[in-house]
Length: 75
Image 1 (tube, rainbow, N blue to C red):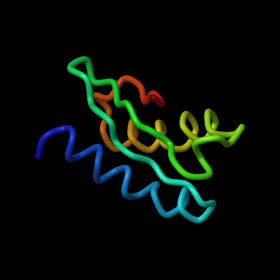
Image 2: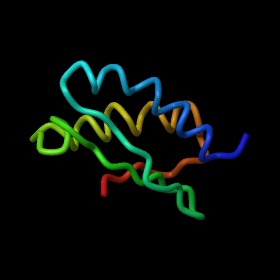
Image 3: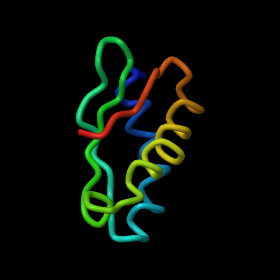
């Protein structure tokens, strides 16, 4: 399984928590230097806590499951 598929599977774990608050996450790309770019949508897109959700939630989960990922960025 390639790294993009692994990231997608990990994002599926986070999705129910985001959807419970009216938001969601979309994978935009995984760069060659192992940076994951995502788009927060719905309520998460304009939430003032989105950065905390991204770093403390999504990035932590992705890096825990896939240690070679360097960072998760919102685009």
